[in-house]
Amino acid sequence: MSVGGEVLISGPYTATYDGASLGLFQGEGGLPTLTSVGKAKGIASTNLYGLSTIDSIHLGRDMFFDAILMEYGKGIRVLWPFGSDWLSLGMPVGTLKRALSKALVLTAVAGTPAAATPATLTMSKAILADDHQGKIVYGPEVRTIPLRLQLYAYDRDPGAGVDLGFGVET
Image (tube, rainbow, N blue to C red; front, side, top):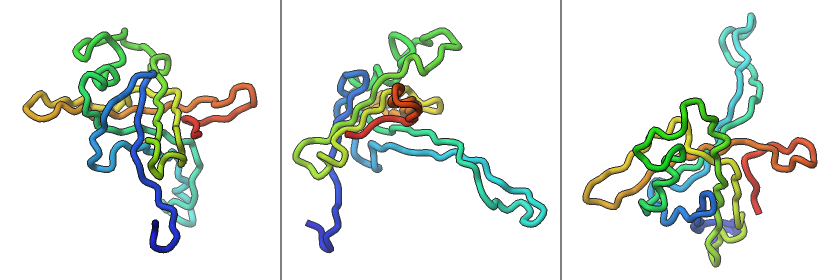
């Protein structure tokens, strides 16, 4: 119970990618996380305010999922979605990544404060991020797989008009 009546939420989530478990996550460094990066164009370079930004135009955002996977066999297939194995070049150059994206589903572990806040997050268009550098240490410690997925925006309810987003919470 909190000191002043605050509602504090904690608790782990499990994750699947394309229906298969991603296994155990390394919990250090605030991972796993969902990160939102806003996009805007500043309004500046005016005769009165010089180069000071006086406003900006909202131009969307990007979202990412970051994690460190601790089960090599479950993580390696997500690290390279373009070919049959981690060392292959994979798909022909010019292949659009959206067509290769898969669903990422995070599910709160039952019995924790996180279990209903939200119980699940489903992001239908997740793929290896453009800027991700796959680094796997082949040494004496646990072979972890750092992972960064980009979540593509999509129309979440095509029949009801435009409802753009990155996923749904339930």
